[in-house]
Length: 126
Image (cartoon, rainbow, N blue to C red; front, side, top):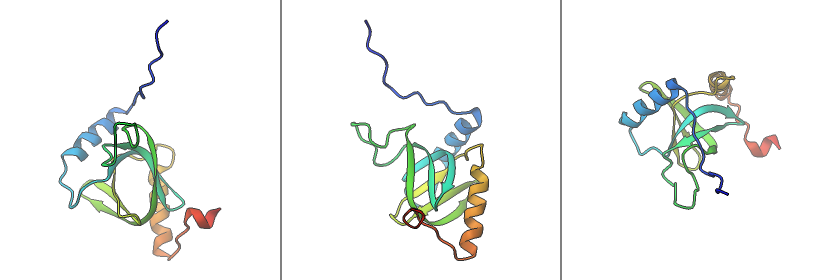
């Protein structure tokens, strides 16, 4: 009896694969913490599938294809064709693609709330 394969299989759309390759080649102004696909903004945090996280280790932490929730977003800004998230913990995440079910809209809602001075954190939502 063979042992089941426990390796995570990452399935990306052709669009996300192309954008990920473009993001890897883009020269950002500072080191990238991770690249995020299928991203949405929830309670002022970014949630997505991470790629090339700088803290990835051999034990499997922060590995490609795993979901991540960032710390609170301090700033969202455009760099070339990409949105980036700067977080309170000092991370710099590149949004490669948005979740097809409202991901881009979640960023627009976040930006509008920030303009109004509203900043709901996960601690305040609990």
